[in-house]
Length: 178
Image 1 (spheres, rainbow, N blue to C red):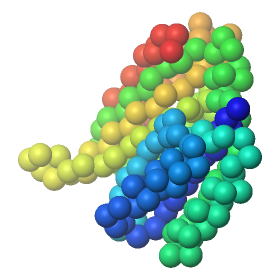
Image 2: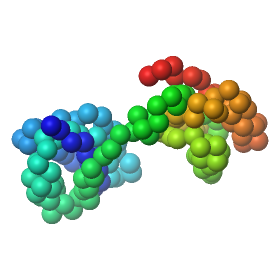
Image 3: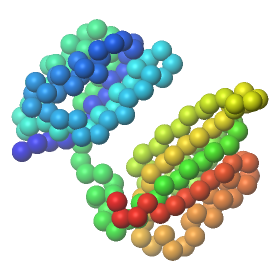
Image 4: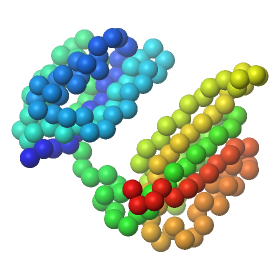
């Protein structure tokens, strides 16, 4: 029997850190189920959902302690089902946002979704300079799940209003029954 854990690591970027983390898992019979990794500023950040044989978490904590001793911030948290798995019948949607960057875009969208009881399953954002002008351009993609009763009530119209008010392109599309 396996148990899922969410592992996080942040610290100085260096060659080999991903290999070291995954070796710790493999040596304990674990597996990476899902992961996100990125250099953010000068720091490297890892977010992983891993499965580990029952009873091996203390062994994993010991291995991760070695990384913590070298200045990395590391956590291992037992994970339950996703919000979508815990709420069958909720409908998956993908939200994409594009436009000139300015403060508060993520907050506006997240606040709107939260007030309607819509759960964010994942979100990624970035700012890149426009090719000609160098103006910072914002892009965000979010995977969300919508309560069944809300799907037919036009909740997407509120995103359109945010887009008009903040001069952004916002599109919400059904992600099917993923």
